[in-house]
Length: 411
Image 1 (tube, rainbow, N blue to C red):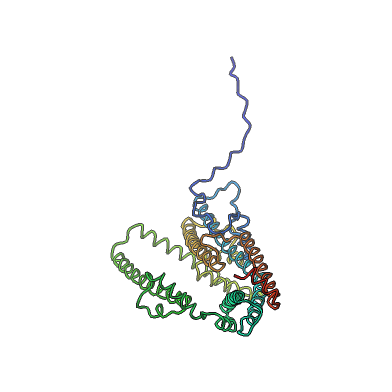
Image 2: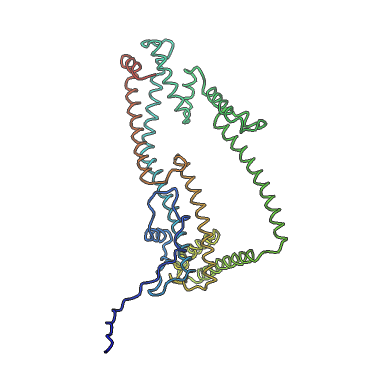
């Protein structure tokens, strides 16, 4: 009996191999401190192109030619550096937008409020003169308390006339108040302040005391750091006398390869961008600008910027990194890791700087929507205070209105 033949199965194109999970993005790539929105690859690439004006270095691999593990690692580090640069640019943009909003929307209101408060303080002063009539003793006490609060607030902003007005009607001068505040602060910080520091002990103002304490802390920190550096130098000297281990030799060779790669890229750019190669004045100016950018990038070991400049100078195509030898790929990847670590430190420092400059609590996110809400809340509060000060100012010149207003509002 003839053997039955199975029908032929239809041909199916094999699936591409799954990506190796070892090269997936790790937890260290997580964004911390910015908005929860994570920019995607297209947004990151667009941000990088908008800053550098160059073509993307992250060109996709040709169909049917998957990247090697070394090339995958290179592309991952490129993405990480681009993402960190995009986050720094985003943080700068959000912070500057908020500061611009404060200047345009809040500063005019603050100036109007300052003038209204100043006018109110001056309007209350005649009612506190010895020969003034119309207010009871209790009402005069309320008016004096309000005048001193307003004058002190304005004096702290630099208004010398208001400082004199405060001292004229207040039982305690501004200098005495600052001295008392400094003494109270000094008592709270007594465990941390050096008793033999003359500047700390002589400070008669809380701000002066804090500055003196900060200088003391800096001096102590510098001395501690000098001792740590001396101990580290001794350890390094002992370590240099020993025979280097194979791992240390490999690390040293990797560092040399990375430095050589960076120097090679820079020298290629320096040669290609020499002004004598320019065909006209416009080209000379373009090459001079590129060379200036190359110098700055080389000084800060910014490999990605040098690679972008290579593309702008038409010294390479977007896929040239994937054709490097394994050794050169490792050297370039190492440089990118170093740059990513430096950018991460810069990002953390910039986040702390913006938190301090924007007067945000520690751990807050630099978020555009959050800052916009904060700006609107500050604007509403300033409008409320301005409306209140203007209403008080309208009552200050009328005895009947002033009496009723003091009874209702002033404490």
